[in-house]
View (cartoon, rainbow over the protein chains, first blue to last red):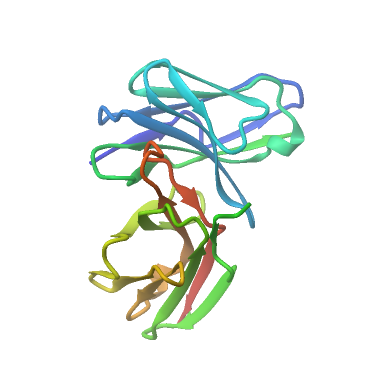
Length: 112
Length: 113
């Protein structure tokens, strides 16, 4: 079974703090994705990576950056957290099946 | 602009009846469509998919129908069970998109006893 894990289930940070969210997949998947989920807005793509050290902006990259130094690990960085970044953050990866993404359990981030 | 739309934010159905969740899309380049199910405090899990070359795909209680001319797909759950209560997301992918998906806003399904 594919397993995608995220470093924290719940996180509370203060405005202005630097925040790291980490995602690890164990199936040697090429593509990894970071989304945020907000009520009424669905899942919105922040960044994705199709290979080590490769990244592309998604639909809402502002205020975020990413790092992919190893194939299994994809990190999302909030350089200076703001209250409007309070959200559920979801990491996903894809393998050989077209488009089918496997998701981690999510990190509920609250910025106060 | 919202390329994948789920116009019903919520749906309530009685146990044993059919649940029909709808999804509309605007981008004719989409060639693959998926449904995901999400419980609170968990990540979405893949449910069923359909390629644009088909108009129906069935897996147990779940059937997805695709109407390309109307740019519309629907998920049918028969019979509905209380464990089906969750948020359902429709998603679409297109060639050359790097396996990226565009998700709808979700429909909260509640199956009542």
